[in-house]
Image (cartoon, rainbow, N blue to C red; front, side, top):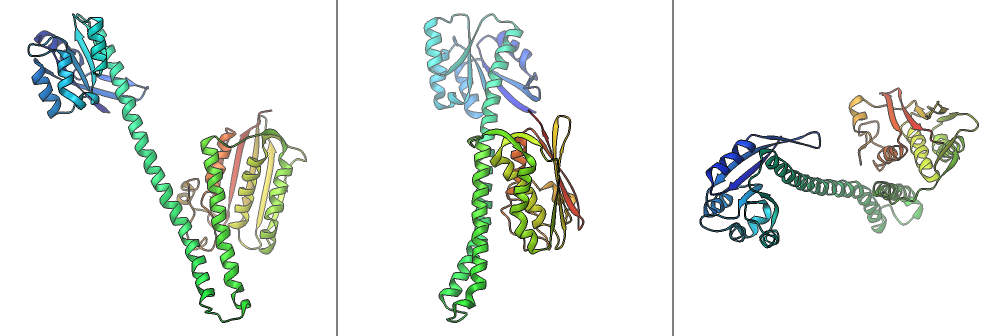
Length: 373
């Protein structure tokens, strides 16, 4: 629950008491979930009100136009910049068009003509409170966005620093001719440098893909595609890596399974699933890709016989730059963005991802996507 502080400046004791009796302790509900509790203080003169505002924080000011020592407009002027932090509502029986214009120019938000009912007072208060609450939410979102951006840059810098340092170290070895004059002696570190550079390139490409998806600026061309062909292409792409480790990839799919989608997005989905199934598999393991048409959905399932994950590791799976770090994954390179991109792509199609994994036995990713023909 959040709180809202109201100050009423009016020379009539009955008016001040009426506002306090109506609003003090009142709980206002916004957006179905946000609850705001109101507390009310009062002042009988402009000078007293100004002193209270300057010494304490208030959100809403109910301000009488005619006061014993000054009028409402003079109170606003005396508050200076402090008036900008308040929602000011003028309460008067003598308001004219000229007064309304002057008060609005000086920062008044609304008018409440005397006499008014408790119901009218609550309506005006809720309207002002809604504006304050929205401003608070915007401020909170701006702060959270700034924190996310900071964390994103921090992690990105960390992820790029390691491969850069490795390549720099290899270049230093070559420059100092540590391994001698024979160029063949440096083949191993040249290959390692290439691996590290590819790691950085993959990170940058994944980062650009994710940015395009989240910004909504990614060009999408939805056409009818045969998912079997897309899966076969992904299997062919992962073939050399699988062959090098004697991993068998099988496909169980109808000859034709049509889905309306963007070809680039489907390639990313299948390439991510199949390449991960190979990357995190054991030598001489197996990858099974299954495609199935349900009544109004399409089911894509990729299983492996690899290292698997614990329940705790699965909870972190789809976060940006999140990688499973343990003794089994120490030598496996990745950007930490692939599954985050996968999740966002599946959400574009209003689908869901399910993960079933057992340590040292394997992992199954299941995608359920509505089939909108």
